[in-house]
Image 1 (cartoon, rainbow, N blue to C red):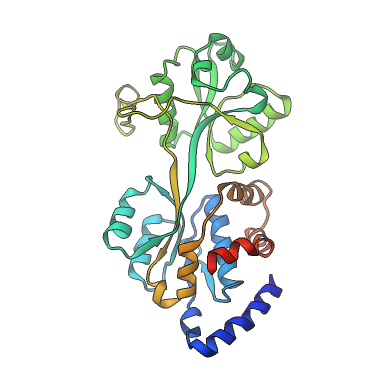
Image 2: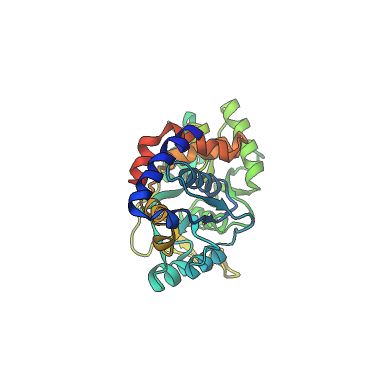
Amino acid sequence: MRYIKCLLAGAVIAVASVTGSSAQDDVTVSIGDLTWTGAKAIAYVIKAVIEGPLDSEAVIVEGLSDGSVIMAGMDKGDGSSDVYTDLWMPNRQGIWDKYIDGAQSVGVNEPYFGTQQMYVPAYMADRVNTVEHLLDPEVAAMFDKDGNGKGEYWAGDAGWKSTRMWQVKFKSYGLTDLWEPEILPDATFKAQLKTAIQREQPILFYYWTPEWIHAAYDIVAIEEPGRTEGCEDLHLDQEDWLEASHYNCATSDASIYVAYSKSLEDRNPAAAKFLSQIKLDPDVVNQWILMVGRDKMDPRDVAEDWVNDNMDIVNGWIN
């Protein structure tokens, strides 16, 4: 990484002597400190590119983890906040409407896509891989862990709206007589998944991309019916959310962006150009999350090593 920085620094200085633009390109880029592993991994890769090939300065602002605060700082354009590393849409429609479509003070790159699906390990896929298979009592019995006649599926953590969403889906698919949700913390579930796969036991579970389990395990998504008008009608904040909601189709993919303050176009044009052109591969993000989240590697080392080894991709982002 140091070799790349030294090599490219000379080129940057040479260009700056002709263009006179180096002062702007030296403005420090302030990166939000979102809490989930994927966002942290992306933050360190962005930092590594800015401080390496771009030969500029970047800082991950410790504790800057509230998405609304990050966006407000980006809107001000004062350098207090410049990058929102992992903007999930339509989850954050409110801040999109306010700053990206409304004030137009925040720009975004081309997104990658995130999914939410039910999964089984690949060794179960020949027996169960569609919602229709889940309607088979013999299939459900394979996943019955407590002997009460119902198969268990992990729906998520108690605090997640998606946990309620999956319970609505199972109701809407007519599965509640055969299946019941397990509502457990993510870490507890991951320990169960590891054990089940080691023993090749049946396990049915909700998960999303990107996340490291996709890089660590061979898992297969359950096929759901395609989306049609009116197939999704959720009221998850109501007291009678389960009875009031209906959802009998596949979940729409989320579009996931890197957002940046457009003030960087004047304050640090090279960084702004890079942030507008960065294009993330979800399979690569899964690998970063695996190393940082599961293997507990230093995200700075993961990012700098990846940038050093993938300059062909990075050059496409910055040129």
